[in-house]
Length: 282
Image 1 (cartoon, rainbow, N blue to C red):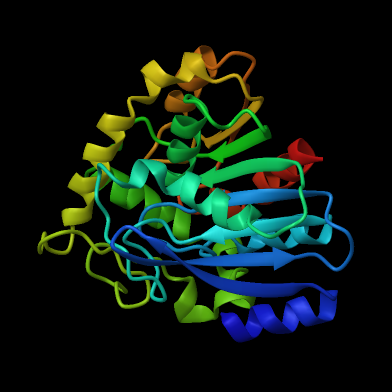
Image 2: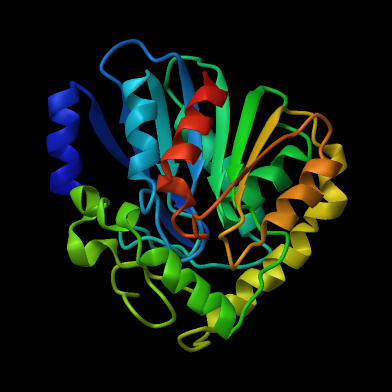
């Protein structure tokens, strides 16, 4: 992926800066994508559980970078091959603040926007419900869960969502095997999920569920004052679109976009979602 991204950035006149900063008992990797010209604003990007700073988000990052946005994507606690952090429910709630500090340190002052997918979106909403984020101009979250719905039907629904033309188009970013997401113990070498102890292949699910319970987004949502775009999909078996409707009804002035067809995993590279987020930031 790094070589493919590097070639694309070179052709665009853009650049990638990789940084490491102390975080959660180790070090976290941050990826700063810098546009060719003067940046119009800064986007802090938080990924979903079981992925990493740039997966599966490059289809979303590239048009934003072309439009002049500086993007700082980072590995959440416990994620990323180049990070050494550990996932802990009581610590990850301030991961966004640590990343924002690193994104802005020594950089020109720019309008700040927050963007999150899945668990990253839930962390964005939780952060905005508390103090210290008054400088944020706007936020966009994709498929942010209040809680997860787990089971055989969910797995089958996500598998159907994977077997779509849009999925295989992502080969240009990750290669054929690289497109395949990590599930349970599968591909955890590529996309680790480091927890305290040894919970087994699917032990991370309980950790994420516990974190979502602590975030209590239904209670936190009314405290959000930042303009927020919520993007969900009726094809999402893991986080039903009804959760987006609940949050939209509780966040003052929120804008809700509900797509058809996209699975939970594929929302970040669904063309409609990408266009909606780009338009929102602009």
